Image (tube, rainbow, N blue to C red; front, side, top):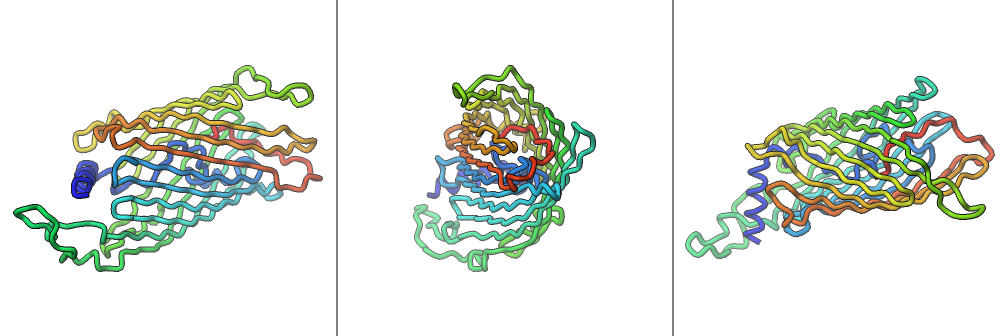
Length: 354
């Protein structure tokens, strides 16, 4: 326990500028669309529900687990999307927990027949707390033997009410065609105070830019006979860049879709920027996913299911011995509109589903 605590504290000291300013992140960021950008609410033109789970550094006690659940729906008559997002992030050693509940709204603007823009905004409620009683401090140890002799500490802050709640606002926008997209999101517009021990610790504003291009290939065929239908074959280069406080991060890679199989790989880091003279190379991410899209009915309705698993192979000085990061995603979309109405004239955003 003591060695684990020392490792964790050392990591925070080395990467202080990163850890203190970074929101939770998902490697499968397009499988967490509402977390990525509120402008993504309603982006499928249907109803959609999903869950994301990430376990980072599972080999050490100071690991991080993040769970996100969401639902969104496109209101065709209003050209609007609405979304609900529930996210929990927990650190294993101290039990530091952050829970947020968010509501989102987006509106689709058709600039031309093949170009659209969707602005969106989010209102979220946050609650953060921690269990400091799981920690041990210097005054609890015998300075000669190094043995733990006292069960209590004179540190005052662990006796305080270690909890904080606040409201947070975010904005986003998404410009897209039938084969390309470019989005931007700004989170924590008011930079609310997030300290749970009574200090002044504003949550830094986060800027995110993401985009990509879908390059279609000759389609394949799934099924046989009357059930045969075209299946997608495509390559999608994509990126995401984030800046928050002193933290900068880039995800850059490729998705290969050979329906029903999707594989992907990308690099995470900013090699030209150092943190405390340490190169910011974080990980190589590997993805395998399964997608099943139902055939269209006479009104254009179709449902879809995607399941993904990714692994972050750590290439930073922390090393793969910490366990990297395991991430799972499950997304299901389905039509909810009146089947007697014609399908909405909505241009679906072509970004990957992982």
